[in-house]
Image (cartoon, rainbow, N blue to C red; front, side, top):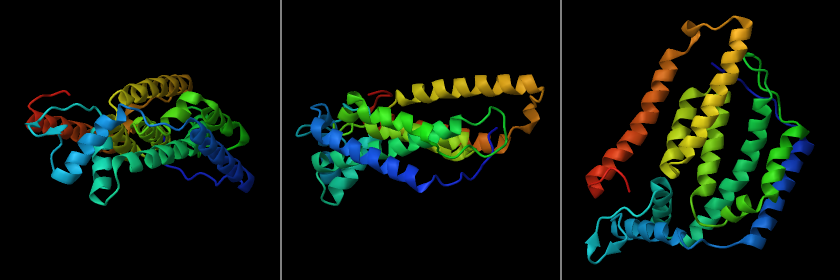
Length: 251
């Protein structure tokens, strides 16, 4: 399993480069800014939950129908309603913040992936080559559009990248928590994480086989068990709450 490590801080000019990419993203977002009409479904659920304590679309008559697939996003927006922030005001701020954070995570993930498979050394620090991924994201219209859409896509992307990075750094329990939060934000995000996990197993397994050091007894079984329990517990609890409130297992 990957070992927990402390990465060397990038050089100041690299940090300035990341800052410039962030500014570029915000400029690009401003040019493409829009609020997706689908987001108003989540907005209405969040407003009804925050103002009336009912996670429903229609209050009169009260209809318990789950018309959303992003429960964590709706709950976050409902918390905003409780403190006086309308969903249509809070959502674009959160999506832009998540997209900016994802640029940093993409650079850090790129650096972590440059570590030699199976090595116990700290992951390489962020270098200029690692800015390619966030730079491309700044230029991709699809990434920019969802950075202001009001939907959960940017947050799910941010959580998924954070889960991958945590796993590569050996923070297994944190990775499990972030993975569960990804699924609660956008369920198909789990497919992305599953693809990452399978690729990691293949690369690390082949590296261990070449070294002849494949020893299952070295696995941190206690941490893996705790991580699995946390992941299943969070998603399972959400499933049971859905069943209890709406009477159905799926939206």
